[in-house]
Length: 422
Ligand code: TNX
Figure 1 (tube, rainbow, N blue to C red):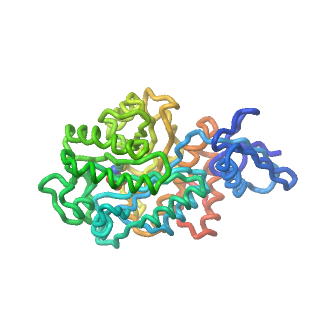
Figure 2: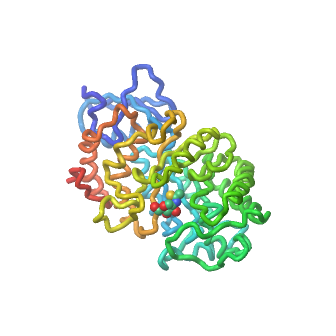
């Protein structure tokens, strides 16, 4: 029988000691003389066994496997450019294939508000009518978001919805100018700058607005988290940011959700159980904020831009994407340890890993897939496999087999010179 660690699947199965618990997501899989046996304590575990089985070459094998991290995520920015239900479900299929379990939807930004809110209808109707560079707008109805949530849940993927606050709100202000700081522009915005818009953090209306939005969002998304963004609020003063954080957290809690936000939220006191998403590797401040988050009792989701930002160009010749975080080739996405990124933090501080896909430069599903693959596979393995079981050369060899699958399924991908994909 082949040893589990040599099985050609992505992510690589870990070796569990005999009798080690499988936990919420683990499984045992045995193929012997053409007969398959799956053991798992949960439906998720069985599902992951099936995903592994699909990628096994013929022959006998025995695997016992479970993930290193509970949050194995991917974020799609549907605000800068909008992507409909069909595109999102196709991406959910990709997440499931690689045993990722979180779909973070960035539902609002300066360029677009992408969810119908019954109490504030102009948010989607007007605020969702455009996108970057005059591209078509769009938004999800409640039924459409429910359809995404259901499709994802059937594949053990939890939707984490994000409404970005207190900055990145020009689309909301264009719809309801009274939400902005006095003197805000009430125009729709179709550029790609960040950091120029802010909610009026001192107005009671802002919090009744967020209460309405979070109520509808909480009813549509059964997952435990509500992501309030919090990033790059460059036109909100620090004092105003702190005032906002103090008032917004009880609103999130009132709807039974745990707070999630980008690393900047850790510049404010955080209630118990928050999740803080580390991202900005271009500034040393990011690491300080990550440490502050843990000191507040939060857990971290690691999204280091120079490793897992899927909108960053692979190399200088990549036609799509941005380069503010340098270039990110497949090996960069693979060769790092989430627990070693920030000094002084241990494994228990880290809830997981997430790869964001920002869409300033991406307009089609092919664009999305080209930026996702092969890097998403590297991120999936970082999130799933224990550090000692990971090896670039081994991964690279296993990854090569995926090219044929992507070709057969019509999935676009970057032909990385680092991987012999064909
Ligand atoms: C930074 S990452 C942003 C986004 C941009 C992205 C582009 C983060 C929390 N904010 O607004 O889309 O860079 O790479």
